[in-house]
Length: 142
Image 1: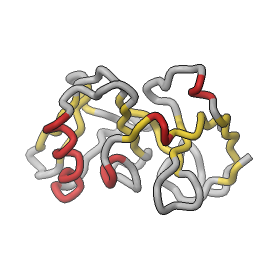
Image 2: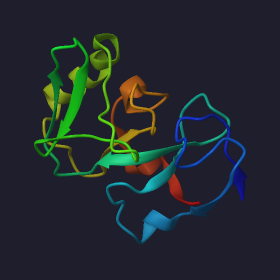
Image 3: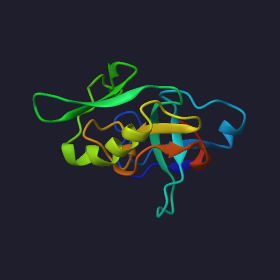
Image 4: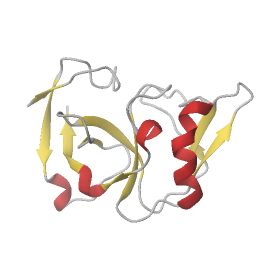
């Protein structure tokens, strides 16, 4: 069991809550959209846990809203969190994602978009871009 630090998955998974990490789960299972995963983030001694929001083969783009904020569109649908709220990220947070979208408008094999549950972003793909399956430690059960 691992104790959750931080609130990026609230209220789905709360700070201080204990979760189970199934190490190596994805060695024999596919990573699915909406799975909660443990990700080995460089420079962090503890893995971070996030929600998989896009998987290989998904088309994705950013769409600017009238508010000046951006929505992440996957397979022609705006992404939402567990409360059914649309993710809205600032132009500053889109810079990393824009670079990936240019090169990979369709997610390549073993590549994923992961987000926290907070609609304004957290330490997730809005900060470091797409992730590789090799850096996924396992599935989180809560």
